[in-house]
Image (cartoon, rainbow, N blue to C red; front, side, top):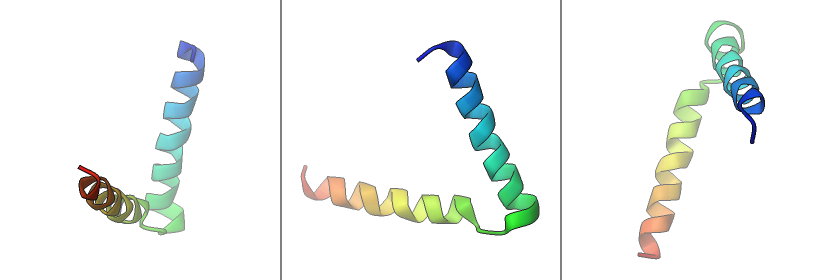
Length: 47
């Protein structure tokens, strides 16, 4: 991955979170936090 692609992806993700906070109201940080918690719980089973 080049630096140009990494910067573009970072800006796209940041824009998505900003659009969610101001316009969309999808609560993306909450949804992603719940999914991350379930992933950690799933992975801890395999430990």
